[in-house]
Amino acid sequence: METVTSVATALLVVAGIAGLAGVESRFSRTDRRLARIEHKLDLILGHLDLHEADPRLDEVAGLARAGRRIEAIKTYREVTGAGLKEAKQAVDRMAV
Image 1 (tube, rainbow, N blue to C red):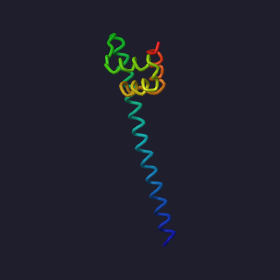
Image 2: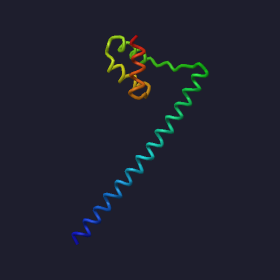
Image 3: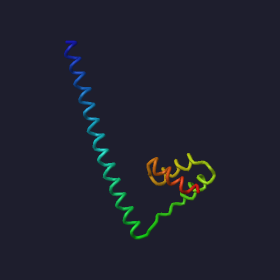
C-alpha cells in the first residue's frame, strides 16, 4: 500500500511539473509575440516621425543628470517597460 501511495505521489508531482512547463511555455510565446508587435509599432512610429511623450521621462532625465542612475533606470523601466540593458543605455544617453 505504501508503494502505491509513493508512486501516485510521484505521478502527481510529475504531472504538476509538466503542467507548469506548459503554462510557462504559453507565457513565453505570448511575451515573444508582444515583443514583436511592440517592435513593429515602434518601426511605424519612427517611420511617421512620431514620438510618444511621457512626462515621467523628464523625471528620468533629471534623475540621470543628478547622478541618481539606479533610480533613473528603475523609473525608465516602469514608464517604458524596457529591459534592464535598454534602460541603462537610455539613462546613459540622458546623463550627458
